[in-house]
Length: 276
Ligand SMILES: NC(=O)c1ccc[n+]([C@@H]2O[C@H](COP(=O)([O-])OP(=O)(O)OC[C@H]3O[C@@H](n4cnc5c(N)ncnc54)[C@H](OP(=O)(O)O)[C@@H]3O)[C@@H](O)[C@H]2O)c1
Image (cartoon, rainbow, N blue to C red):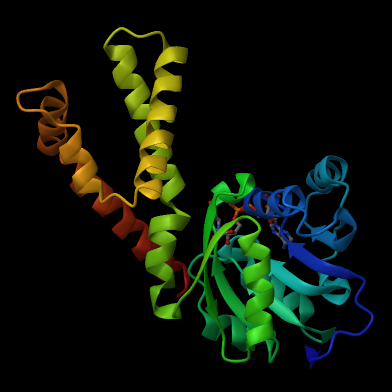
């Protein structure tokens, strides 16, 4: 791959390679927040049907050619599965690429591997999460050695449009993947289990589901707005001999805390493995 640092003649501001779940979360968030217009975006994927859906739903340009994305977009987001990365990088070998900025959201794939495959372009390793879809994501950025302040500013602009942004050292990225990248699934399971608990206690499922999701939403909103430590919130709602302390004792007996700690650790280790 021949690389030039400037990006003349680029017709799109942002390109995404891999139009899956995370790509849709990011692009729909960016459009909803008006951070980019549909005309600024292009997405590639291997499935024409998926591209038709994205083009029809969001009015963006789409292509089956990853190379076309790289050649037309100033900033390129890599949003394929980590296992696909080597074959994607091989597609660009021998092509002339005027790169400006690459943003990789691939779980586990380290900057060293990205930089070895993508040459001297500026690269930032990024870990977003799916609440980006509704502007409530949290994204960690780990800049590579060629990333300049204006590259970091571009990445911050993109991900600030879909939630909070933290810039961190790469050494934390696998742990962040295990916590906030995978965390929405853990929280979703907790909400599903709360719902099942309500059903087990005699509530109709739709009512239990509404109570469960709004309880989690309200609790997080309360903690954020009042800057409340979780232990304090728990203490405030556990009256002596009451219902809540009975439930807390049951959670502790079932190893709830250990289960969540173990889930984050397992996801962290898996992120490390994906980078091998
Ligand atoms: N989902 C999350 O919560 C989350 C959070 C943080 C980071 N990530 C990271 O984001 C990346 C994407 O995850 P995802 O959940 O969005 O996966 P996904 O839904 O499977 O999206 C990947 C997309 O890339 C397509 N694709 C496969 N091979 C391709 C190729 N050679 N060229 C272009 N497109 C290709 C896939 O098509 P097919 O399905 O037809 O193969 C699919 O549409 C992963 O690296 C993951 O680690 C995900």
